[in-house]
Length: 259
Ligand code: 13P
Image (cartoon, rainbow, N blue to C red; front, side, top):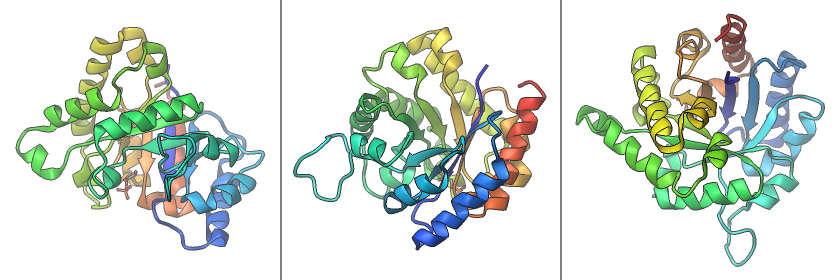
């Protein structure tokens, strides 16, 4: 039985610490002490400390949006796993498509970051997903395979069981175009099958695989109800506490029905 993880990726938002605190507090108040679904918020680095303070006493996890693979040294602008732990992080997003495509991040780099996250005892959320052109060229599985093999290289089954994957089709991110529940489930089943072949059925059964890409309160229930979709990585709709809480509520309803 996998518990759903609903995570809000705030990306480059909001602009001020005050607005970040307000948003985090709205989610905290709305969720209360519920733990039937796992929830995490990923604000920009500079607001992590502030949001950690706001979230005190709440079951909500705190995620960074990236990390570097070295712990210390001459790496201007980078942030390391131990630093993230020090400011209260529990999770870290790695290999988001906006970094893979915008910053040229490779699966090899994602792998190095993943190992650094595990060494720091952070829960990694590793993102994978195909572009629109790749899907139209029927290369979705080929692209995902490269990303899975490269990003997860060298992990033991035990390590893999503690990794969260996020399938985020690039064409669905921020576009309002959601993958249909059937389309998403088909890819999630492909990922689960690869995990089974690579790490064994017991491990594959434990890995949380989120869906991301225009998840909203009104489409969350159907997506989260799919057998291999174990949560959501939410962008735009995570910037309004009410919308994000609506997605969490959909997840709670799915869990209550005994997913
Ligand atoms: P949107 O929900 O805005 O499409 O963003 C998804 C995403 O990239 C989350 O990481």
